[in-house]
Length: 477
Image 1 (tube, rainbow, N blue to C red):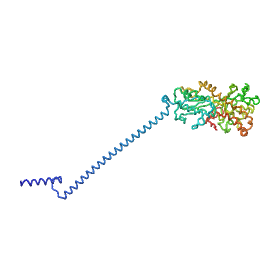
Image 2: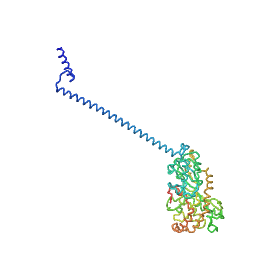
Image 3: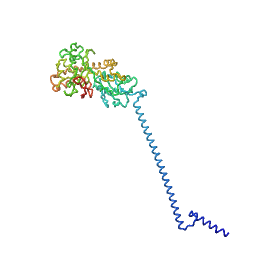
Image 4: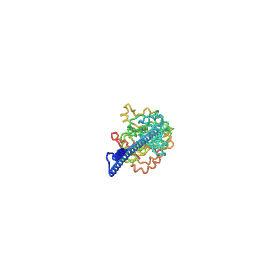
Protein backbone atom coordinates (compact mmCIF):
# COMPACT_ATOMS: atom_id res chain seq x y z
CA UNK A 1 0.00 0.00 0.00
CA UNK A 2 2.77 2.47 0.84
CA UNK A 3 4.61 1.61 -2.32
CA UNK A 4 1.52 2.15 -4.53
CA UNK A 5 0.85 5.82 -3.62
CA UNK A 6 4.22 7.29 -4.83
CA UNK A 7 3.79 5.45 -8.09
CA UNK A 8 0.23 6.67 -8.54
CA UNK A 9 1.27 10.26 -7.76
CA UNK A 10 4.03 10.10 -10.31
CA UNK A 11 1.59 8.88 -12.95
CA UNK A 12 -0.83 11.73 -12.19
CA UNK A 13 1.99 14.30 -12.29
CA UNK A 14 3.25 12.98 -15.63
CA UNK A 15 -0.28 12.98 -17.09
CA UNK A 16 -0.78 16.57 -15.95
CA UNK A 17 2.51 17.58 -17.46
CA UNK A 18 1.66 15.82 -20.71
CA UNK A 19 -1.70 17.51 -20.95
CA UNK A 20 -0.24 20.97 -20.35
CA UNK A 21 2.63 21.02 -22.77
CA UNK A 22 2.00 18.12 -24.97
CA UNK A 23 5.56 17.06 -24.12
CA UNK A 24 7.04 14.87 -21.50
CA UNK A 25 8.61 17.55 -19.25
CA UNK A 26 7.57 19.79 -16.41
CA UNK A 27 6.93 23.56 -17.08
CA UNK A 28 7.15 26.53 -14.84
CA UNK A 29 4.19 28.80 -14.20
CA UNK A 30 5.46 31.49 -16.74
CA UNK A 31 5.98 28.93 -19.41
CA UNK A 32 2.47 27.66 -18.93
CA UNK A 33 1.07 31.20 -19.39
CA UNK A 34 3.07 31.70 -22.55
CA UNK A 35 1.78 28.42 -23.88
CA UNK A 36 -1.77 29.43 -23.16
CA UNK A 37 -1.26 32.78 -25.01
CA UNK A 38 0.24 30.91 -27.95
CA UNK A 39 -2.70 28.55 -28.09
CA UNK A 40 -5.08 31.49 -27.90
CA UNK A 41 -3.27 33.16 -30.82
CA UNK A 42 -3.57 29.94 -32.78
CA UNK A 43 -7.24 29.78 -32.03
CA UNK A 44 -7.69 33.40 -33.18
CA UNK A 45 -5.80 32.66 -36.39
CA UNK A 46 -7.99 29.67 -37.01
CA UNK A 47 -11.07 31.80 -36.36
CA UNK A 48 -9.84 34.49 -38.76
CA UNK A 49 -9.06 31.88 -41.40
CA UNK A 50 -12.51 30.43 -40.94
CA UNK A 51 -14.13 33.87 -41.12
CA UNK A 52 -12.07 34.71 -44.22
CA UNK A 53 -13.09 31.50 -45.91
CA UNK A 54 -16.70 32.17 -44.99
CA UNK A 55 -16.34 35.70 -46.36
CA UNK A 56 -14.84 34.38 -49.56
CA UNK A 57 -17.56 31.79 -49.87
CA UNK A 58 -20.13 34.52 -49.14
CA UNK A 59 -18.66 36.78 -51.86
CA UNK A 60 -18.70 33.95 -54.35
CA UNK A 61 -22.28 33.17 -53.41
CA UNK A 62 -23.20 36.85 -53.72
CA UNK A 63 -21.57 37.05 -57.11
CA UNK A 64 -23.40 33.92 -58.15
CA UNK A 65 -26.66 35.45 -56.93
CA UNK A 66 -25.99 38.72 -58.78
CA UNK A 67 -24.95 36.84 -61.90
CA UNK A 68 -28.14 34.82 -61.69
CA UNK A 69 -30.14 38.01 -61.34
CA UNK A 70 -28.31 39.55 -64.28
CA UNK A 71 -28.97 36.48 -66.39
CA UNK A 72 -32.58 36.54 -65.34
CA UNK A 73 -32.83 40.28 -66.13
CA UNK A 74 -31.14 39.82 -69.51
CA UNK A 75 -33.41 36.92 -70.32
CA UNK A 76 -36.44 38.97 -69.34
CA UNK A 77 -35.25 41.91 -71.43
CA UNK A 78 -34.65 39.64 -74.39
CA UNK A 79 -38.06 38.13 -73.93
CA UNK A 80 -39.64 41.57 -73.78
CA UNK A 81 -37.73 42.65 -76.88
CA UNK A 82 -38.83 39.53 -78.70
CA UNK A 83 -42.42 40.09 -77.65
CA UNK A 84 -42.20 43.73 -78.78
CA UNK A 85 -40.73 42.70 -82.11
CA UNK A 86 -43.46 40.12 -82.52
CA UNK A 87 -46.10 42.74 -81.78
CA UNK A 88 -44.55 45.11 -84.30
CA UNK A 89 -44.36 42.40 -86.92
CA UNK A 90 -47.97 41.47 -86.25
CA UNK A 91 -49.00 45.13 -86.53
CA UNK A 92 -47.10 45.52 -89.79
CA UNK A 93 -48.67 42.37 -91.06
CA UNK A 94 -52.13 43.65 -90.16
CA UNK A 95 -51.41 46.99 -91.81
CA UNK A 96 -50.01 45.44 -94.95
CA UNK A 97 -52.53 42.67 -95.36
CA UNK A 98 -56.14 43.71 -95.55
CA UNK A 99 -57.45 40.19 -95.72
CA UNK A 100 -56.29 36.61 -95.98
CA UNK A 101 -56.44 36.61 -99.77
CA UNK A 102 -53.87 39.42 -100.07
CA UNK A 103 -51.27 38.22 -97.57
CA UNK A 104 -49.30 36.24 -100.09
CA UNK A 105 -49.55 38.78 -102.93
CA UNK A 106 -46.15 40.27 -103.86
CA UNK A 107 -45.66 43.99 -104.39
CA UNK A 108 -44.61 44.83 -107.93
CA UNK A 109 -44.11 48.02 -109.94
CA UNK A 110 -46.92 48.60 -112.43
CA UNK A 111 -48.27 51.28 -114.75
CA UNK A 112 -52.00 52.04 -114.58
CA UNK A 113 -53.81 53.59 -117.55
CA UNK A 114 -56.53 55.96 -116.35
CA UNK A 115 -59.39 57.96 -117.81
CA UNK A 116 -61.40 60.59 -115.96
CA UNK A 117 -63.69 63.55 -116.37
CA UNK A 118 -62.23 66.51 -114.53
CA UNK A 119 -65.56 68.18 -113.86
CA UNK A 120 -65.93 68.84 -110.14
CA UNK A 121 -62.28 68.04 -109.35
CA UNK A 122 -59.43 70.38 -108.48
CA UNK A 123 -56.98 68.70 -110.80
CA UNK A 124 -55.09 65.43 -110.72
CA UNK A 125 -52.51 65.89 -107.96
CA UNK A 126 -53.73 65.39 -104.41
CA UNK A 127 -53.16 67.79 -101.54
CA UNK A 128 -52.60 65.64 -98.42
CA UNK A 129 -54.49 66.91 -95.41
CA UNK A 130 -56.94 68.98 -97.46
CA UNK A 131 -60.46 67.61 -97.56
CA UNK A 132 -61.95 70.70 -99.21
CA UNK A 133 -60.32 70.51 -102.64
CA UNK A 134 -61.04 67.02 -103.91
CA UNK A 135 -58.69 65.72 -106.61
CA UNK A 136 -58.57 62.69 -108.88
CA UNK A 137 -55.76 61.16 -106.84
CA UNK A 138 -57.81 61.39 -103.65
CA UNK A 139 -60.40 59.02 -105.07
CA UNK A 140 -57.74 56.83 -106.70
CA UNK A 141 -55.75 56.32 -103.50
CA UNK A 142 -58.93 55.56 -101.56
CA UNK A 143 -59.86 52.90 -104.13
CA UNK A 144 -56.36 51.38 -104.01
CA UNK A 145 -56.64 51.00 -100.24
CA UNK A 146 -60.18 49.62 -100.23
CA UNK A 147 -59.32 47.09 -102.94
CA UNK A 148 -56.32 45.85 -100.95
CA UNK A 149 -53.73 46.95 -103.51
CA UNK A 150 -51.77 49.09 -101.05
CA UNK A 151 -51.52 49.20 -97.22
CA UNK A 152 -53.81 51.66 -95.49
CA UNK A 153 -50.97 53.28 -93.56
CA UNK A 154 -49.28 54.26 -96.85
CA UNK A 155 -52.26 56.23 -98.10
CA UNK A 156 -51.02 59.53 -96.68
CA UNK A 157 -47.51 59.06 -98.04
CA UNK A 158 -47.65 57.48 -101.47
CA UNK A 159 -43.91 57.93 -101.88
CA UNK A 160 -43.62 54.68 -99.95
CA UNK A 161 -45.34 53.03 -102.91
CA UNK A 162 -43.14 54.93 -105.43
CA UNK A 163 -46.24 56.69 -106.76
CA UNK A 164 -45.82 59.07 -109.70
CA UNK A 165 -48.25 60.61 -112.18
CA UNK A 166 -47.31 61.31 -115.77
CA UNK A 167 -49.08 64.67 -116.00
CA UNK A 168 -50.45 67.11 -113.41
CA UNK A 169 -53.68 68.08 -115.11
CA UNK A 170 -55.27 71.14 -113.54
CA UNK A 171 -58.76 71.96 -112.34
CA UNK A 172 -61.51 70.67 -114.61
CA UNK A 173 -59.14 69.11 -117.18
CA UNK A 174 -60.06 65.59 -118.28
CA UNK A 175 -57.92 62.69 -119.44
CA UNK A 176 -58.40 59.61 -121.56
CA UNK A 177 -54.82 58.36 -121.32
CA UNK A 178 -53.28 59.37 -118.00
CA UNK A 179 -50.63 56.96 -116.68
CA UNK A 180 -49.51 56.55 -113.07
CA UNK A 181 -46.76 54.27 -111.81
CA UNK A 182 -46.57 52.69 -108.35
CA UNK A 183 -45.97 49.49 -106.41
CA UNK A 184 -49.09 47.43 -105.73
CA UNK A 185 -50.03 43.99 -104.51
CA UNK A 186 -50.73 41.90 -107.55
CA UNK A 187 -54.12 40.72 -106.38
CA UNK A 188 -56.42 38.79 -108.66
CA UNK A 189 -58.66 40.92 -110.92
CA UNK A 190 -56.75 44.02 -109.85
CA UNK A 191 -58.28 46.45 -112.36
CA UNK A 192 -61.84 45.30 -111.68
CA UNK A 193 -61.43 45.54 -107.91
CA UNK A 194 -60.02 49.07 -108.11
CA UNK A 195 -62.89 50.20 -110.35
CA UNK A 196 -65.40 48.81 -107.86
CA UNK A 197 -64.38 51.58 -105.46
CA UNK A 198 -64.15 54.43 -108.02
CA UNK A 199 -66.92 56.80 -109.09
CA UNK A 200 -68.20 56.34 -112.67
CA UNK A 201 -66.29 59.39 -113.95
CA UNK A 202 -62.93 57.82 -113.03
CA UNK A 203 -61.79 54.50 -114.49
CA UNK A 204 -58.63 52.40 -114.58
CA UNK A 205 -58.52 51.02 -118.11
CA UNK A 206 -55.47 48.79 -117.93
CA UNK A 207 -52.43 47.63 -115.98
CA UNK A 208 -48.97 46.54 -117.12
CA UNK A 209 -45.84 45.39 -115.29
CA UNK A 210 -42.88 47.76 -115.60
CA UNK A 211 -39.27 47.80 -114.45
CA UNK A 212 -38.48 48.64 -110.83
CA UNK A 213 -36.88 51.93 -111.88
CA UNK A 214 -39.77 53.03 -114.07
CA UNK A 215 -41.13 56.53 -113.42
CA UNK A 216 -44.19 57.55 -115.43
CA UNK A 217 -43.18 61.24 -115.49
CA UNK A 218 -39.47 60.91 -116.19
CA UNK A 219 -39.82 58.12 -118.76
CA UNK A 220 -42.52 59.92 -120.74
CA UNK A 221 -41.01 61.43 -123.89
CA UNK A 222 -44.17 62.88 -125.52
CA UNK A 223 -47.75 63.85 -124.70
CA UNK A 224 -50.83 64.21 -126.86
CA UNK A 225 -53.62 66.64 -125.96
CA UNK A 226 -56.93 67.37 -127.65
CA UNK A 227 -58.99 70.53 -127.54
CA UNK A 228 -62.73 70.25 -128.20
CA UNK A 229 -64.27 73.52 -129.38
CA UNK A 230 -67.39 74.68 -131.24
CA UNK A 231 -66.63 75.24 -134.92
CA UNK A 232 -68.18 78.70 -134.72
CA UNK A 233 -64.81 79.69 -133.27
CA UNK A 234 -63.37 79.44 -136.81
CA UNK A 235 -66.13 81.58 -138.31
CA UNK A 236 -64.97 85.04 -139.52
CA UNK A 237 -66.21 87.82 -137.29
CA UNK A 238 -68.44 89.20 -140.05
CA UNK A 239 -69.27 85.89 -141.67
CA UNK A 240 -72.25 84.73 -139.60
CA UNK A 241 -74.94 86.76 -137.88
CA UNK A 242 -75.17 84.31 -135.00
CA UNK A 243 -71.48 83.96 -134.20
CA UNK A 244 -72.18 85.52 -130.82
CA UNK A 245 -73.69 82.17 -129.75
CA UNK A 246 -72.83 78.51 -130.14
CA UNK A 247 -75.39 78.30 -132.90
CA UNK A 248 -76.93 74.99 -133.86
CA UNK A 249 -77.23 76.27 -137.44
CA UNK A 250 -73.55 77.02 -138.10
CA UNK A 251 -71.52 74.47 -140.07
CA UNK A 252 -67.85 74.85 -140.90
CA UNK A 253 -67.01 74.96 -144.61
CA UNK A 254 -64.30 72.57 -145.89
CA UNK A 255 -62.19 75.53 -147.09
CA UNK A 256 -62.26 77.05 -143.60
CA UNK A 257 -61.19 73.74 -142.08
CA UNK A 258 -58.31 73.52 -144.54
CA UNK A 259 -57.16 77.02 -143.65
CA UNK A 260 -57.34 76.24 -139.94
CA UNK A 261 -55.16 73.17 -140.44
CA UNK A 262 -52.67 75.17 -142.51
CA UNK A 263 -52.32 77.67 -139.68
CA UNK A 264 -52.07 74.95 -137.02
CA UNK A 265 -49.36 73.18 -139.03
CA UNK A 266 -47.13 76.25 -138.64
CA UNK A 267 -46.65 75.26 -134.99
CA UNK A 268 -44.93 72.02 -135.97
CA UNK A 269 -41.20 71.89 -135.40
CA UNK A 270 -39.08 73.68 -132.83
CA UNK A 271 -40.09 77.22 -131.86
CA UNK A 272 -39.56 79.67 -129.05
CA UNK A 273 -42.90 79.67 -127.22
CA UNK A 274 -41.99 82.27 -124.58
CA UNK A 275 -45.09 84.29 -125.59
CA UNK A 276 -47.34 81.28 -125.00
CA UNK A 277 -46.83 81.10 -121.24
CA UNK A 278 -46.18 83.57 -118.42
CA UNK A 279 -42.96 84.90 -116.93
CA UNK A 280 -40.75 83.25 -119.51
CA UNK A 281 -37.84 85.27 -120.94
CA UNK A 282 -37.17 85.10 -124.70
CA UNK A 283 -33.63 83.83 -124.09
CA UNK A 284 -34.75 81.08 -121.69
CA UNK A 285 -33.69 77.78 -123.33
CA UNK A 286 -36.66 75.95 -121.79
CA UNK A 287 -39.04 78.10 -123.86
CA UNK A 288 -37.99 76.20 -127.00
CA UNK A 289 -40.44 73.35 -127.51
CA UNK A 290 -40.68 70.68 -130.17
CA UNK A 291 -44.17 70.10 -131.60
CA UNK A 292 -44.52 66.98 -133.73
CA UNK A 293 -48.17 67.11 -134.76
CA UNK A 294 -51.08 69.61 -134.81
CA UNK A 295 -54.32 68.91 -136.67
CA UNK A 296 -58.04 69.70 -136.53
CA UNK A 297 -60.29 66.75 -137.28
CA UNK A 298 -63.55 66.60 -139.16
CA UNK A 299 -66.46 68.39 -137.47
CA UNK A 300 -69.25 66.45 -135.80
CA UNK A 301 -72.59 67.39 -134.31
CA UNK A 302 -73.47 67.02 -130.64
CA UNK A 303 -76.77 68.18 -129.18
CA UNK A 304 -77.48 70.12 -132.37
CA UNK A 305 -74.23 72.12 -132.35
CA UNK A 306 -71.13 71.45 -134.42
CA UNK A 307 -67.81 70.77 -132.73
CA UNK A 308 -64.30 69.81 -133.82
CA UNK A 309 -61.24 68.42 -132.06
CA UNK A 310 -57.75 69.93 -132.37
CA UNK A 311 -55.03 67.39 -131.58
CA UNK A 312 -51.55 68.49 -130.46
CA UNK A 313 -48.58 66.24 -129.81
CA UNK A 314 -45.27 67.48 -128.41
CA UNK A 315 -42.41 66.51 -126.16
CA UNK A 316 -43.80 68.69 -123.36
CA UNK A 317 -45.89 71.79 -122.85
CA UNK A 318 -45.60 74.86 -120.67
CA UNK A 319 -48.38 76.34 -118.58
CA UNK A 320 -51.18 77.75 -120.84
CA UNK A 321 -49.21 76.86 -123.99
CA UNK A 322 -51.90 74.79 -125.74
CA UNK A 323 -54.67 77.22 -124.84
CA UNK A 324 -52.68 80.11 -126.29
CA UNK A 325 -51.79 78.15 -129.42
CA UNK A 326 -55.51 77.58 -130.04
CA UNK A 327 -56.38 81.15 -129.04
CA UNK A 328 -54.01 82.75 -131.53
CA UNK A 329 -55.26 80.61 -134.43
CA UNK A 330 -58.87 81.46 -133.52
CA UNK A 331 -57.95 85.17 -133.53
CA UNK A 332 -56.46 84.84 -137.02
CA UNK A 333 -59.38 82.77 -138.35
CA UNK A 334 -61.89 85.34 -137.11
CA UNK A 335 -59.92 88.22 -138.65
CA UNK A 336 -58.66 89.96 -135.52
CA UNK A 337 -55.00 89.26 -136.34
CA UNK A 338 -52.91 88.70 -139.45
CA UNK A 339 -51.28 85.36 -140.18
CA UNK A 340 -47.81 86.86 -139.78
CA UNK A 341 -48.45 87.24 -136.03
CA UNK A 342 -47.74 83.53 -135.62
CA UNK A 343 -44.13 83.78 -136.75
CA UNK A 344 -43.72 87.10 -134.94
CA UNK A 345 -44.85 85.46 -131.70
CA UNK A 346 -41.81 83.16 -131.85
CA UNK A 347 -39.43 86.12 -132.07
CA UNK A 348 -37.68 87.93 -129.22
CA UNK A 349 -40.37 90.58 -128.74
CA UNK A 350 -43.36 90.15 -126.47
CA UNK A 351 -46.66 89.59 -128.27
CA UNK A 352 -50.13 89.79 -126.72
CA UNK A 353 -51.34 86.21 -127.32
CA UNK A 354 -54.95 85.50 -126.21
CA UNK A 355 -55.59 82.47 -124.05
CA UNK A 356 -58.55 80.29 -125.02
CA UNK A 357 -60.81 78.84 -122.29
CA UNK A 358 -59.65 75.71 -120.51
CA UNK A 359 -62.93 73.93 -121.19
CA UNK A 360 -62.40 71.30 -123.84
CA UNK A 361 -58.78 70.43 -123.01
CA UNK A 362 -58.16 66.69 -122.64
CA UNK A 363 -54.98 64.68 -122.02
CA UNK A 364 -55.38 62.06 -124.74
CA UNK A 365 -52.27 59.96 -124.46
CA UNK A 366 -48.73 59.79 -123.09
CA UNK A 367 -45.91 58.15 -125.00
CA UNK A 368 -42.98 56.02 -123.82
CA UNK A 369 -41.12 55.36 -127.07
CA UNK A 370 -37.62 55.18 -125.60
CA UNK A 371 -38.74 52.93 -122.75
CA UNK A 372 -40.50 50.63 -125.21
CA UNK A 373 -37.40 50.35 -127.39
CA UNK A 374 -35.24 49.41 -124.43
CA UNK A 375 -37.53 47.19 -122.36
CA UNK A 376 -40.59 46.46 -124.49
CA UNK A 377 -38.96 43.49 -126.15
CA UNK A 378 -37.05 41.96 -123.25
CA UNK A 379 -39.64 39.24 -122.74
CA UNK A 380 -40.39 40.37 -119.19
CA UNK A 381 -42.11 43.72 -119.62
CA UNK A 382 -44.78 44.49 -122.22
CA UNK A 383 -44.47 47.72 -124.23
CA UNK A 384 -46.57 50.60 -122.97
CA UNK A 385 -48.62 50.98 -126.12
CA UNK A 386 -52.15 50.44 -124.72
CA UNK A 387 -53.55 49.51 -128.12
CA UNK A 388 -56.03 47.05 -126.66
CA UNK A 389 -57.33 49.70 -124.28
CA UNK A 390 -58.01 52.35 -126.95
CA UNK A 391 -61.54 51.14 -127.58
CA UNK A 392 -62.36 51.44 -123.88
CA UNK A 393 -60.74 54.90 -123.79
CA UNK A 394 -62.84 56.09 -126.70
CA UNK A 395 -65.98 54.69 -125.12
CA UNK A 396 -65.18 56.56 -121.90
CA UNK A 397 -64.71 59.83 -123.78
CA UNK A 398 -68.01 59.38 -125.59
CA UNK A 399 -69.83 58.57 -122.35
CA UNK A 400 -68.25 60.95 -119.83
CA UNK A 401 -65.80 63.52 -121.26
CA UNK A 402 -67.39 64.86 -124.45
CA UNK A 403 -70.95 65.08 -123.02
CA UNK A 404 -69.66 67.07 -120.05
CA UNK A 405 -67.74 69.51 -122.25
CA UNK A 406 -70.58 69.94 -124.74
CA UNK A 407 -73.19 70.42 -122.03
CA UNK A 408 -71.06 73.00 -120.20
CA UNK A 409 -70.26 74.89 -123.41
CA UNK A 410 -73.88 75.06 -124.51
CA UNK A 411 -74.98 76.15 -121.05
CA UNK A 412 -72.21 78.61 -120.17
CA UNK A 413 -71.07 79.71 -123.64
CA UNK A 414 -67.47 79.93 -122.42
CA UNK A 415 -65.89 79.95 -125.91
CA UNK A 416 -68.32 82.54 -127.25
CA UNK A 417 -67.86 84.74 -124.19
CA UNK A 418 -64.11 84.54 -124.60
CA UNK A 419 -64.29 85.44 -128.32
CA UNK A 420 -66.04 88.65 -127.33
CA UNK A 421 -62.77 89.79 -125.69
CA UNK A 422 -60.66 89.39 -128.87
CA UNK A 423 -61.32 92.92 -130.19
CA UNK A 424 -59.61 94.43 -127.14
CA UNK A 425 -56.34 92.69 -128.01
CA UNK A 426 -53.82 94.77 -129.92
CA UNK A 427 -51.86 92.16 -131.85
CA UNK A 428 -49.47 94.80 -133.18
CA UNK A 429 -48.50 95.95 -129.70
CA UNK A 430 -46.32 94.18 -127.22
CA UNK A 431 -47.87 92.09 -124.53
CA UNK A 432 -47.08 94.58 -121.77
CA UNK A 433 -48.78 97.44 -123.68
CA UNK A 434 -51.96 95.51 -124.39
CA UNK A 435 -52.29 93.58 -121.17
CA UNK A 436 -53.72 96.42 -119.07
CA UNK A 437 -56.70 96.86 -121.40
CA UNK A 438 -57.47 93.22 -122.07
CA UNK A 439 -56.47 91.02 -119.17
CA UNK A 440 -59.35 91.75 -116.83
CA UNK A 441 -62.01 91.33 -119.49
CA UNK A 442 -60.40 88.18 -120.83
CA UNK A 443 -60.00 86.61 -117.42
CA UNK A 444 -63.57 87.44 -116.49
CA UNK A 445 -64.96 85.92 -119.68
CA UNK A 446 -62.86 82.79 -119.34
CA UNK A 447 -63.61 82.29 -115.64
CA UNK A 448 -66.47 79.92 -116.39
CA UNK A 449 -64.11 77.61 -118.21
CA UNK A 450 -60.96 78.29 -116.30
CA UNK A 451 -59.21 75.00 -116.69
CA UNK A 452 -55.54 74.48 -117.38
CA UNK A 453 -53.59 72.09 -119.49
CA UNK A 454 -50.96 70.02 -117.83
CA UNK A 455 -48.58 72.37 -116.03
CA UNK A 456 -46.76 69.17 -116.10
CA UNK A 457 -43.13 68.39 -115.57
CA UNK A 458 -40.88 69.99 -113.01
CA UNK A 459 -38.08 69.06 -115.42
CA UNK A 460 -39.76 69.43 -118.79
CA UNK A 461 -37.90 68.78 -122.02
CA UNK A 462 -36.83 71.82 -123.98
CA UNK A 463 -36.12 71.05 -127.61
CA UNK A 464 -32.93 72.04 -129.35
CA UNK A 465 -32.87 73.32 -132.91
CA UNK A 466 -32.60 69.82 -134.40
CA UNK A 467 -35.60 68.55 -132.45
CA UNK A 468 -33.68 66.60 -129.81
CA UNK A 469 -34.80 67.02 -126.21
CA UNK A 470 -32.60 68.71 -123.66
CA UNK A 471 -33.29 69.12 -120.00
CA UNK A 472 -34.98 72.34 -119.06
CA UNK A 473 -36.94 73.80 -116.16
CA UNK A 474 -40.71 73.75 -116.48
CA UNK A 475 -42.42 76.96 -115.49
CA UNK A 476 -45.17 76.68 -112.92
CA UNK A 477 -47.30 79.42 -111.41
